[in-house]
Structure formats: C-alpha cells, structure tokens
Length: 346
Image (cartoon, rainbow, N blue to C red; front, side, top):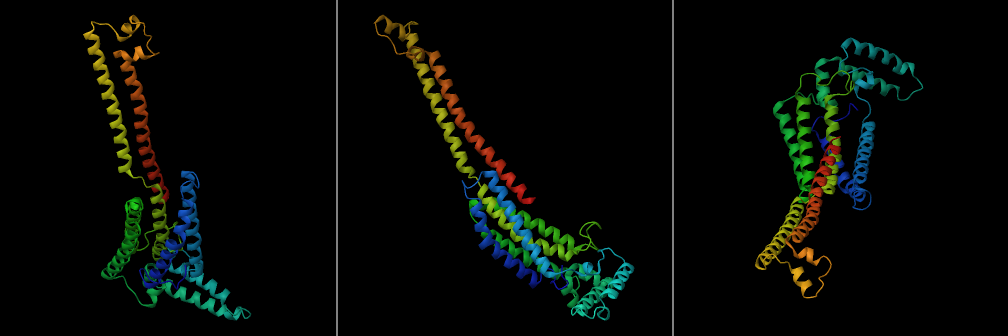
C-alpha cells in the first residue's frame, strides 16, 4: 500500500469507508436481493451465489483501492517488516544505483522514483520513525504523530459508535435480527483486533504473515472490508430469517388438533363400552344382522371399542406426521441459519 495513506481513524479512512458504505447499501444490496429472491435459485445455491458475488466484488474493489495507493515503503525497498537496518541499507544502496537519474537520463520519472526510494529509506532506517510508520502510515510521519492512549481510544470510540449506529439502523426490525447479530459480532471482533494491533509493542504478526505489510494497513483492510461484511450479513440474514413465533404457533395448533382427535375418539370408545355393557355384551352389528339390515363395510369394526382404537391410531399417525413436519421445518431453518452465519464468517 501507498506511503501516502492516512493515519488510523483519520479522515481519509473515514471517507473511504463511508463511500464504501453508500456503494454497498445503494448498489450492491439491491443486486444481492435480486440473487436471493425466493424461487430464483435453490435455497443453498442462492446463498452460495450471494456470498460468491459479495466476496468477488469486495476483492475487486479492495484490490483496485490498494492498486491506486501503490506500494508501501517496505515494498519499494523490497525488504520485510523485520529487516535489520543493515538489510535496509543494502537494499537502498542497490536501488539507488539502479534508479539514480544520472543512470536513467531517458526516463522522465527517474527522479520521482529515486525520491520515493530515498523517502522510504529515511523512514525505515530510523527505528522511531519506523514504529510510527507501522502504526499510523505516512501521515503519521508527516504530522510527527505519536501513540497517545487517550486520543487513540477517543478516535476508536467515535469510529465504532458511528458504525454501530449505522449498522443498527440498517438492521432494524424482526426480519433483520440475524443480520444485526452477525454485524455486531463482526464489529466487536474488528474492535478487539484493532486494539490488539495498535497497542502491541513491535509487530504482532509472525514474520511469515504479510511480511511487507504494517499494522496500519491491516487496520485499513479491516475498515475497508467491513461495509461488505455488514451488507452480506444484512442480505443473507434477512433471507435466512425464520419467524420462530409463527412456527411455534403452527406446532401448537397441530398439537391442539391432535388432542381434539384423541378426545373425540376416546369419547366414542367410552360410549361404545357403555353400550356393550348395557346390552350384556351384544354388539350393534349383531342386532343389525338380526333385524335383517346389513351394516356398511367396516362400520361394524369401527363401531366396536377395538375399531375406535384403530381409528384413533390412524388419526394419531396423520397428526404425528403434521407435528413432525412442523418440527422438521424448525430444525431445518435453524440449520440453514447456522450455515449462513458460518459462511459469512468464512
């Protein structure tokens, strides 16, 4: 990234994040909603297409911004974040000989290139400047900025409170509850990471991880990607939202209908048993046969207590299938919600 970038939490970062916010809210969100429109694709395919679209767009947009910023001091000198002063001197000497205007008379940009390399060397060879550059970028060098804990937490509070309010407003309503939960979780994780990066002594990264990037650039990347993350949480969270209250009401109504069936059949069984006892064990079917009336097929079986119990079993099977279907929908929706959350994290 460029040595011209602003300090952490500065106006440049805020403007970039704000422009990204409007870009994702007014352009990307409608496009994502089109992908996630019910019936357009299968449910899981819709989620994967939306995540792929958001990830690709965020990668392209962030890559273009990084390309516009240009290389940072470490990349200019082709040294790593943990390079010693001796390594930096050797790298500068080699580049200065290659880029010196006297050796490149036909290159009109040779002087500018040489000046950039000289500026990078002047910053990185001084350990105090180097620490400021790692934390606050080139603007920190230009303004002779030093780490002040009070000022840092004030700037941090303003940034995260502002984004927290915007995220809360955009995810108002029951349907956006999942998106609000995921966004606030991401905001808290980003806050912890930024505090860790900015308050650590020296570089918190392993030497193999982003060897030519600074803590300031890592924070810039978090701030740049957050609008994309928030938009993804908002879109996919709304798509995966399940009204658990409505599902629970449906389940309770199914159980109520099942209970009514049980009570009705038990009452018929009770009446049948009372009739059998009153007639001395004689069945209605036998009386009908004596009178010369042929009962309907299955009527005699269902008129007996045993028949009523079988009828109860059949009704219970139908009711149980309804209840199991409602429970299955609840489990399925919960599983899909978890899938969407883990997909957003990845």
